[in-house]
Every structure is written in C-alpha cells, then in structure tokens.
Image (cartoon, rainbow, N blue to C red; front, side, top):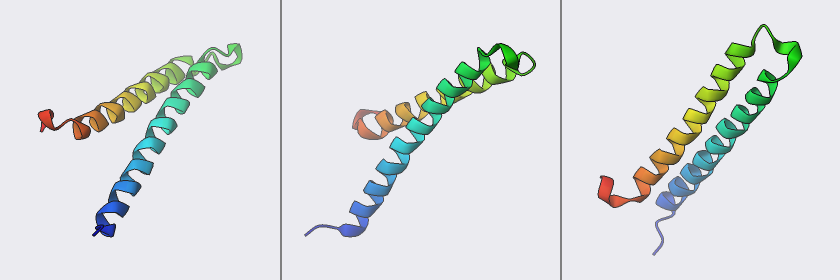
Length: 74
C-alpha cells in the first residue's frame, strides 16, 4: 500500500527544492546583469555581492540535495 502522507511530503519537498534552486540562480543572473548596467554605478558593488550570494545559495541547495540523496554521507 502507498503511504500517501509520505508521498505528499516528498512531492512538496521536491517542488520547494527545485523552486529555490531556480529562484536563487535566476536572481543571481539578474543581479549580475544589473551590475553591468552603466546607469547603476552607485549600487554596482551591492549588486555584485547580491549576485555572488545568490549563486552561493543556489549551490548550497544543490549540495544539500546531493547530501540527502547519497546515503554514504549520513
């Protein structure tokens, strides 16, 4: 018999994990492109920092997902 409660938990975790990777990665790309805009001279350092942090968060989510999938790390 299928345990539907566990199935729903896994489905929600998958959707949230994939959504957070897409969110952080697209935010990093957007902030990086805004940092190259000549009209954004005042906030260029802030935009680059935000881009780097967003890339790091996307990578952290990916690494956490790998940690959860590979039983050797537990």
